[in-house]
Amino acid sequence: MREILIRIKNLSLITIAAGFIIGIILLVRPDESVEFISILCGATVIMLGVGAWISYFTKFRSTFLAILGTLAVVAGIILCVKYRSIISAVLFLFGIFVLVGGVVDLVSALEARKNDLKSWIISVVMAVITIVLGLLVIINPFNSVMALTRILGAGLIVYAVMDLITFIQIRKMVKFTLNGQVDVQGREHTED
Image (tube, rainbow, N blue to C red; front, side, top):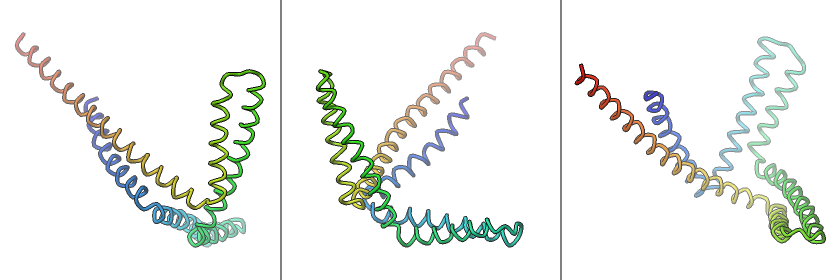
């Protein structure tokens, strides 16, 4: 058990450092981070397409595989070159979805008021916040990506700090366990 805790503790140091560094990068440089992640995803899709074409030429002569490989390469290139447009379009659709959900929540909250439910005020406030969020995402989707990237960065930093606290606690627990074993062994030897 002790060895498992030590191994987990050592791996935890790597995730703590990586989470903290990535969090700072996302927080400080959100635009470059989004670009890097988009290009990385695009390159991955391109490699999948190239892999499909390699399989087509070496193993399977399937038209479906060739079409799939071509579509993956084209999609990967588009993702690398036009990532801002793609992210903006996806966020625009997401903003519409959030806005509609906020309007439905607002109507439901006002219905709750008619039925004398006491929580209607909280529901109205949450619905208005949701509507405003949806409008912000629709009006300026790419700035929404930057804000979300910064929030993700801050979240990773908080995760790293919390994981560091857990790491310290596990380290103390392992030391306590080791000290307890030494005492028990010492007592057993004195009784013999």
